[in-house]
Image (cartoon, rainbow, N blue to C red; front, top):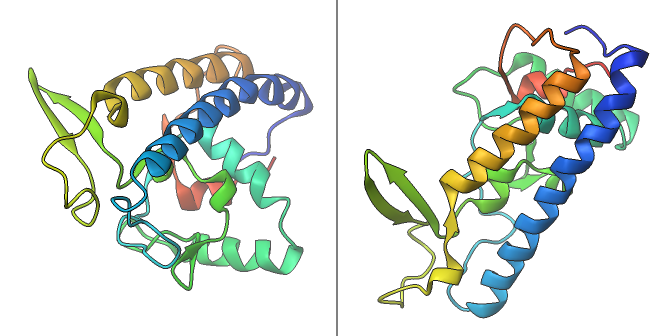
Length: 187
């Protein structure tokens, strides 16, 4: 991947603030659900069954690449080596001993895994969550369910703004990057 030019870096940092704000709001919702249902949410360090090698919008990929730069150099190099060898069938390259190395910077999909998500598909609505969670409840209150279509629409809008500002009207060849590709970005 080509490194971002100086002209691209400044708008990138400003555009990332929209993403960071959304990420903070999602974190608040996740924390509230976990606080409201302390015995029902069983996600914890070491449980990595939801962790997959996923694709990300550019805004999330760049945020992840920036977080990688804050790690010690030897850890960064180890992650980049693992990312360079990763395939679509590989486990997430951020996993070490069942934990995410960049947990604080993990993408939105990783933040919401396991929690109740409202999914709309062809006019049908379903609520999905990890089979280990909410096993003792017959129903969930609406405030405990995140509308995934709304979240994805918001994230896509933030990404579109990011792309327009950073790539100055020339969108990148690929609309999404894998987590491995994000770790290999040169900023």
